[in-house]
Length: 475
Image 1 (cartoon, rainbow, N blue to C red):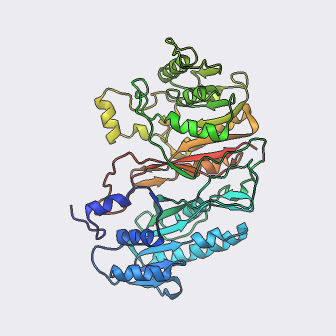
Image 2: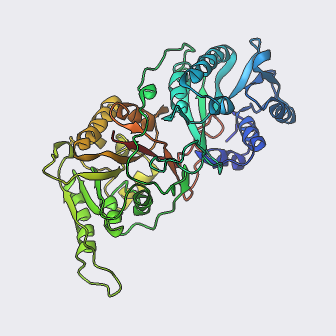
Image 3: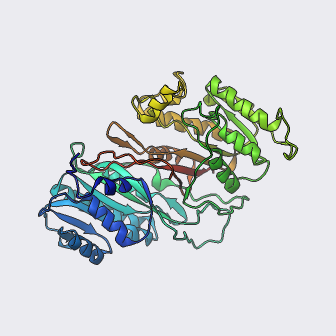
């Protein structure tokens, strides 16, 4: 297949499609983006750059035989690619009004870029989320929302760094991951974009300061981590979207202590409960599907009261309650007060999409391809806005049985469906911030999945190999 998009071979193309990467140097970061997004043939169209590395980018563009135009010199030249590097300016802000100025300038620049950027070519924005005035502010999400009214938001990549996240605080009662990430946001000028800015209203700037509590964090969870779970057992593979106990254990060790009450409203085959019991926590939850609820109950029972006792296994004294019930119908009478919630909800109705490779493999093995056929199942809601609204209401209902100052972790990922990007993690957080305090997100980076050459030769489409672990606190 001929590559009409850039100058890369198929072997070079694939690595760039991974949705997260280990950040090495500025030169490598900028070179890889330039090489991927400039045309296959030399052209008079230039690369636009805004940021603090103009000299480095000039050298890179010269080596690639492409013209560079800096922001201050831009005079409506024809463009084939643009990079806006906002990392240093955003990292240096002291108050929200500083960011508002940066955002306004960025929007004005992007409107001008849109006018001369070639059709179906890309804009990349490099930006972190940061603490501002002791609040955690997802400024990358905000800018993505705002610019997506001008361009089409196509993708994001997570740059994983080893740089320490240092804050002027010695308060270990606040959750602060021990290193930094930044976002590479990718926008495209195409038939779905019109170059007109319309402000996106959201709750980001209403975020509250994290409530100090008696809980002391160990700071063992970084902003990104690679996790390779153990192979799934026979009864676990029956579930089409199980998440690993190893992930649950990581967060239990950070957010809870022994004998804490842990809850999962969508328990599946019981990953949360199994990990909780093994970590000497009490395990609670609900599961709508009777089929999966029975499997989860059996797995928990085998831990608490094993049929074959192991001479080297200490007895489990912790409790579990797992109800085959719609979580929207629970009350305070069903469970004790909860210390921590961790869960992975349905990723919209994506399991109902036909033709996916993983789905085909499950059909071939006679395995279930969706959560259930129940019309009340959130995974069967076709309308995106209805889905995230109903999902947020599930968490709001659970808040009634959670302690004040307690924490929540929700494992999700942004969704690509029929050529459109749905920022599920950001949109869900936006709703939840009306009643919860947003804490820094962390990323489960998957490194054991084969890359697929989506869009090869035509356009950039990443392989989504990162999961958001969204963290919140109940005020």
